Image 1: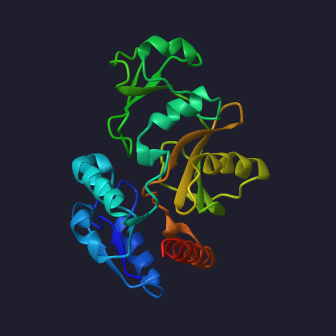
Image 2: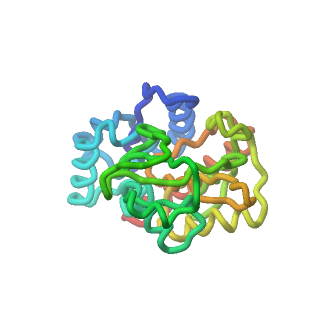
Length: 269
């Protein structure tokens, strides 16, 4: 079953090498599936010639929002299978989920989208404000007095966290974790050994998202209280930092991805 692998090999991501990661992944996947690579702007036109589309390091959608929406609509209309499936409830659908999870009492950085609701947030001297359709810290600002229009931006208390940590899953199976010991250097990551409590935290969000198949990254920060709080649930095109992993962990991840893709494709036949 031929796969169309969507990536932007030249996207200049800070601290990450999208192209290198996707060259590595496609070289390994090609051992199991016939596939071709394409830029996200070409995905809609090319996908009719393939059995499924796998979206990987394609860059922030806001840089090509209209083309992405057209791709989604065409895939849904034609029944083309997309991996990750287009039913994701997290970043794939925008940032509304941070508001929903806050309202539902999940362990997430408290979030509102109206300056009139600042009283619902923990007391703070500074707020983080970012666009609802933002990504990759684009448009992030810090202010003592948010003055955005209601519903326009996400507003969160600025948290003096100890570090960030990311948990990587294929389907609902945990693969590995990485963390950034220096909060100012988000992408200088080292391996992290999660505790059972850490994994229970991450799995809670994987279960909430209800994706049967796909790659997900749960990003969290260690708050001053010692608790983990969700920063982001990336279910569209999470960068995997595979180059930082030892070869056995890389191999295990590829094996899990091949098994997931095989089951995903079989389910559509």
